[in-house]
Length: 94
Length: 403
Image 1 (cartoon, rainbow over the protein chains, first blue to last red):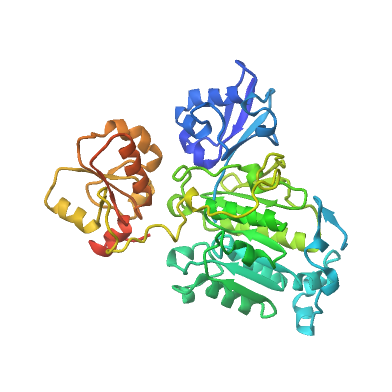
Image 2: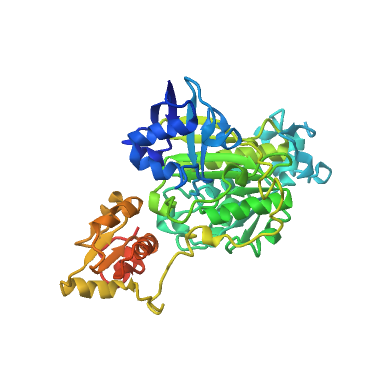
């Protein structure tokens, strides 16, 4: 079940420079499982994507396609084949 | 046209059409290409002239935004900035110039905007935007443009926009990526709906640490200027409820939805009823340590002069540089081991808690965080090089480049 994950450049260096990563969510079809898969592959991403309790941070927003998962069950939001997950960190530069 | 609504905003509520000033013959010539545009025309141009836009920050984003808003004939432009023009600004802050190096940014920008369009009135606030002055400064403007460079001022700008009921035209940049949106419209979401809580200090590098592609604020700032003019004229569909993500490396523009959060303390439950100081969120550049010689040293701090003496004596200690590899190529202190702050926590087990450790960076801010992490891990002999490479260059070795 391939899901496309779009990483911001700030995180791509922790994923060997990849800005788009395919993740498999066969184990559990949720955004959380996609993140697990991603972190298995690139452990350095772990602490940047979820807190000590395994939950998303309030300053890193996950989009499933165009929707903020915070309003759709968080990491439990269901994914389907072909979905896109976009990770948007808060940035402050001006 | 005047009654056009976009995402629940009625532009007329911000700029009363009835009081829109007349244009003189010079202005009619100057704005001819707007006057020919069916959706702007004479009415729209008069409305722009009667409009007041406040720009928080006259830096990377504020530069293109202020230039285009002035050129477009927005009648009153407010500029808030407490900084001075530095040579390292000019790679992207195009409202300033070599001739205004060292000038107050608000003065430098005002002079440039006046030259570009003498019909525009520029109001300057040479002060940090703070909880104590934000409402007073922002009260008389129609639209607020967020061109700040730190989380504290971004949350403050958002909250004052929500409290005063004024649209907040948001833009933010980092390295090769940018974000833009419109917050705090009548029914739209706000910045806190998107990011309820700012990251802890040190989790996200600032522009000063992370670098930024010089043209990127040009892209994002001109989007902010476009959204501002659309709001003032009631044209088209604004970015309210959407976040525009710009990635210059792949040259991809993507929009995602920003939902209004009913639990948002600012625009949802409205539990935020007054402004508070937000500085603790993050080191605010400009207020970051410009430590003077007279400043009393904490036991876990060391001055560049002391460090130079230790190096000369060949004292037995570890010198650790927590900057990024590309910064090392610009300026360095010999003998330092590079552990970028982002991987510092993971590297702590490789360090010896019994040894004396001196940690350094560019200004002393990042190394201060690293020393705090060492202290939390039980290290008793870790010290921060106060003022970093910048003060090393001032006090010890002027051949080391400041950046």
